Length: 315
Image 1 (cartoon, one colour):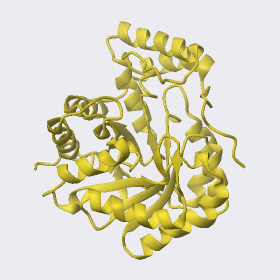
Image 2 (cartoon, one colour):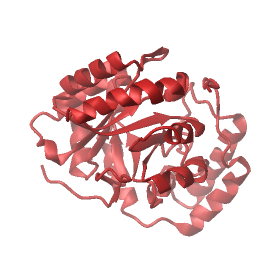
Image 3 (cartoon, rainbow, N blue to C red):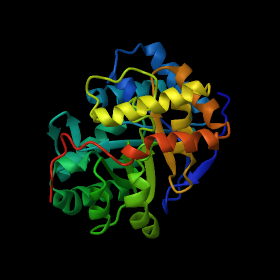
Image 4 (tube, helix red, strand yellow):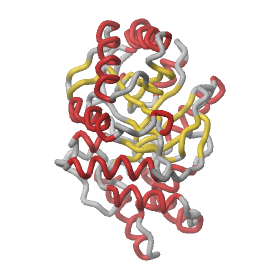
């Protein structure tokens, strides 16, 4: 396998250096459409060939299917050629279990599915749906036990509302976080609200969802998309502006999200290897600063407006 390299950034104080663009494997679990095994293999191998050597997955993606298929696709590839990030605690739409017992079981099951003896990052997945006191007092200490046993290198959390990161980081030690849809052309709350609190602590910050669930693309929005009509209309105007300049708004969106020096990586996922190759090409090109300024001006009226649907007010 011929491997390209991408620029890398340190993940806080963890000692891991991550590519500025990482491969998200949720699509491999048929979360968005049915996938063929040939697509799985081609997508994983294209990502690794292009230097996207951090792969992000979860037992929630495809209810285990993403991890299983990754394990198959990675068979025979030397373990030192890629890093793995998986999660625990969320196993179905409304099934959460962050107990210490389930933590230990979940990590062992993930290792078995992935065909490895360790994962580089384990994240407590979508912690806003349970009391944060459990995450702090029970879940993270249980993951630390797996870390001490050599099964996990770094311990972190993921979620959507910005407040959960600062609340947990102020009460216990974590190595890293993963936030999604909160550092995009339209929404920069990850950098505005969280970075100032976490960076001084040396906590690594990973970003996901540069396209904001297709909002910042020319694709039709999925039925489950949650942004308001106002946000969607502004994004359409921005996409039309890009189109008049001969640029796909998705290109600008990806370049923007990958460009921030304090975000270790941005995770984007697809089961289409052509998309992955296109993304690698996009981020190798310089960003059009004039177009970026014009697009940000169009989006300014809806800047940092984010949905809250389905997110309970915990704590």
